[in-house]
Image (tube, rainbow, N blue to C red; front, side, top):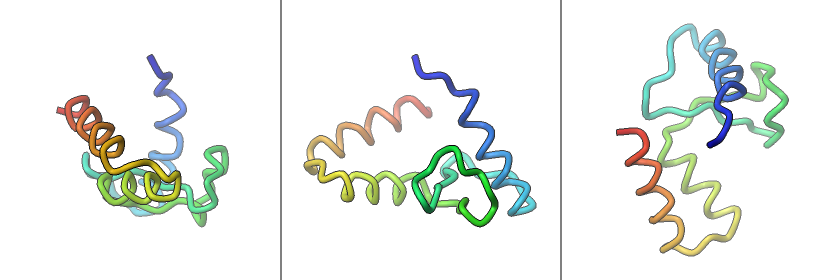
Length: 78
């Protein structure tokens, strides 16, 4: 199982920047793809579905693999 403790650091930093809590369907996106860079200028909120599709497209995953991954993520969240 993945260690989720580091996931909360960038979420909290983005929530401070936005002045509100992230919605369950939002993720904190690192603009420069450096997960260690939690500066406010590097963090933006994105809809989970948009974020996933952008990363899938940039990684060149097939539509089937991307759909399966999104379905697993949806089941994990609910």
